[in-house]
Length: 246
Image (tube, rainbow, N blue to C red; front, top):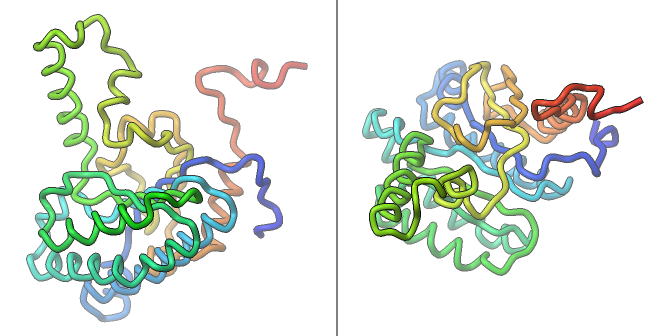
């Protein structure tokens, strides 16, 4: 299937909602953390697949602000899994020239997580290949509120005028200000919603939903999503005849 993908028509930025770890675990008669642990294998495979094929940015929705409402045992297990995964994979990221970054309310994470995330970002900062972004303690509503506060403060101080506020100004104050908007968003496990993920940035993204649970999602599933993307016509408000004049 990879041979069918047109390398010159790849999305620069792919965002993924990694859904279905809990449902997958339930089908195995295991607890939810078992599903999250097996989901790490999918993360490794998809990061590798995206880097190999030439995707420049990959953002994974790893932990939302709403996830803090889950049972404490699951939250603790997820945080421990996050730390152990970063520690074990940082060398591999460097070897593959992958730069690590994160977005979200990072300061709300446990201290050990903040430390490991910061070190991973610093160690891989000079890498020039794909950028891997983890969305942690993230919600688009939180992000938009924070951006609005920052802009309001600049208006109040006289640094900005209200008439200056436009799309570019808003983008400059989002946590993704340094990366392009996603052109493709993938969600696994059959749910058809965005779940408070990159609401502003996904305005013109192509949305791809698959019933495959995240622990079963592999490179072939990724290639299928990319082929689906390449078979779509991206019009950005125009009509087909404007994009393909006779």
